[in-house]
Amino acid sequence: MNLFEVYQINPIVITKARGSYVWDDQGQQYLDLYGGHAVISIGHTHPHYVKRITEQLNKIGFYSNSVIIPLQAELANKLGKISGREEYQLFLCNSGAEANENALKLASFHNGRKKIIAFKKSFHGRTSLAVAVTDNPNLLAPVNQTGNVIFLPLNDEAALEACFRAQGEEISSVIVEGIQGVGGIHESSASFLQKISSLCQQYGALFIADSVQCGYGRTGKFFSHDHAGVNADIYTMAKGMGNGFPVAGILISPKIQARQGMLGTTFGGNHLACAAALAVLEVMESENLMQNAASIGDYILSELKTIPELQNVRGRGLMIGFEPIEEWKDLRKNLLFTHRIFTGEAKPNTIRLLPSLALRKKDADEFLESIREEIHAPATEELK
Ligand SMILES: Cc1ncc(COP(=O)(O)O)c(C=O)c1O
Image (cartoon, rainbow, N blue to C red; front, side, top):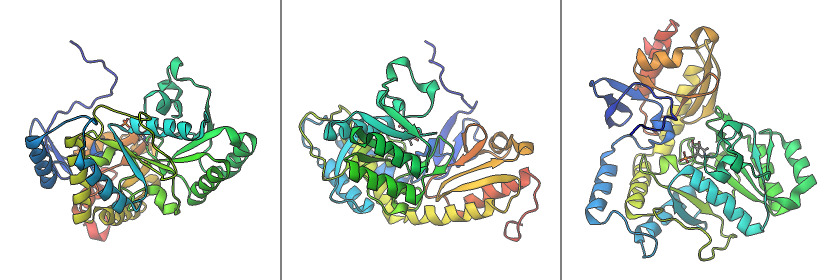
């Protein structure tokens, strides 16, 4: 049987991984600054993670939500503390799209409304509502066209206010990434997030913070929206939550009441998924990974800004984007095939860095040195 070919694939077979490195089937080592799309949060095959999952698997891997799963409460408590949202409620599912799907649906259940505000260049996933609020017509099948989504320019407070003034009573929710990932590392400004928060409160709409890519400590705070000092009504999480184990969830404000049957899932919150998610939080805490993400991220950002061939160096923590000038448009390819460094991309020519939050300074230096070597720029004193 053939695979359904929907991916652009690098001709590389990865057979081993550790920390911020992976190895291919020829034994070639690569530095991983992509993390399988922002998924590897605590580093590949972290010993505590492997141990916790292995021990759990030897006890019980799965049972459905028809019985008590104490690991779920343990995870909720830990998430509440680390995110500073102990009064919120947790619903567990399996992927980022599913988290957003549930969040949008929950908002609509809560206020009985249909319209959603989303933003240009957003990406929220590929299931029916998640893709409807994604600003990419190529991903939208005719069946996904609801007519209920209003796309506004990101960071345009006047447009947002005008939209609420005109149809505020119909708006169910506003969904926004703290930093757009797939869209190319574009940060929502603090004042824009504050405006979303206040307009949502004023008009009875819900503020959904898509933290699937920018959340889980990647920017130095648990949610990147926290840099704006606002509280969203629902936070959606996935990617880094399981360090590769498929687990996702939504944090739900106490003002939203659960009712039986409102949301549901077979796999969500199973024993193994909770063990993986707990292991991730335990390592984040014991190794101070949020602080590490902030400081190594600052270091990479400031070093990249000294290289004139790289334009629009931007981002926060370990979520960084930049564009090489036209002459170096093959930089990403050369980093992979010459220097053996994985990076991410965003169309048309952004290089995205989404490494593990445990990235060390010496790994960052290896990357910076490779870039400088590649574009023949003179090395700084420190890197000589
Ligand atoms: C911001 C954001 N939301 C949602 C998703 C969808 O997540 P998943 O692929 O796990 O469904 C992604 C995936 O890249 C994302 O970047």
